[in-house]
Image (spheres, rainbow, N blue to C red):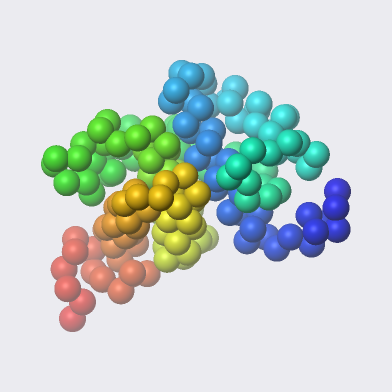
Amino acid sequence: MSAAARSRPTGRKRTAARLAAVQALYQMELGGAAADMVVDEFLAHRLTPDAAREPPDFGAADPGRFTKLARGAAAQREAIDRTIAAALSPEWPLQRLDAVLRAVLRVGVFELVYCRDVPPEIAINEYVDIAHAFFSGKEPGLVNGVLDKVAREVRPEEMGQPRGGEAAR
């Protein structure tokens, strides 16, 4: 392992774990493979310190965080998809979105709902950055809007707004 990889801050390893989880969910959706099989393949071949990485490459990933995000988002997919659908406008249903964009949103929503150890603003920024790694158009803005709306609903105390979207008094 290089000195740079050993000294990489925990935050960068979490960022790389988020990216890998998005890639794993994308692979699950396109290939129809089970979450455990895809996660095990990533851990054995793609997330090892000496693994060859393709762009976008955010560096070495935290394997525990990757596993939690990928398995969790896959296990909660139906509930997550309902949450995303409720945050989208009616003319843009979830299935109309690009598969990579769906994966970004699914992992992002999972983290907002189930990973309370990460402040929502940080999670939102991370997934917007991941969206920028794949898209140069309006997609990162869509990610920002959907995740912000979800965060205000599920973590209003951290977003400065009461549950249900009511204005803070």
